[in-house]
Image (tube, rainbow, N blue to C red; front, side, top):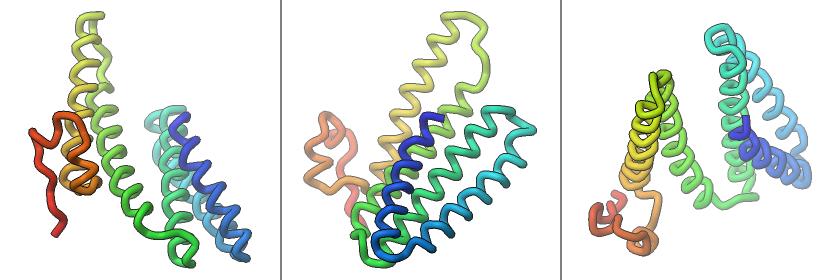
Length: 161
């Protein structure tokens, strides 16, 4: 559930900006759509995963709501699309990494040693997956990528086509 805090804060900030720009109706419509998505996801996820399904539904709905509200701000000209593209790419990388880690770690380990191995595997695998995705999506500029320790020598920056 802690994962829902950031997208909820993004939506609340965007909703305040939409209200200030005389677009309170857009914020209300976005909130209603987010509630519908949450309800539908609850119907799908709660029977299969219980409270974890409800929490997942909240995080997914809040994330979609945050993305939609940022897009609304871009559409009306209150936000530059540059940061939104960066956030979308980074968010996609985080989402893929989170799902992969969750699926990989979903099996209960038989012993402390097995749990330690599982934790190391999930942590290292998640980090490698995240780095690979942000590299493939060219999240950072050449200058930013070159400032990272060790990575530029292993993975040269990908130029966007």
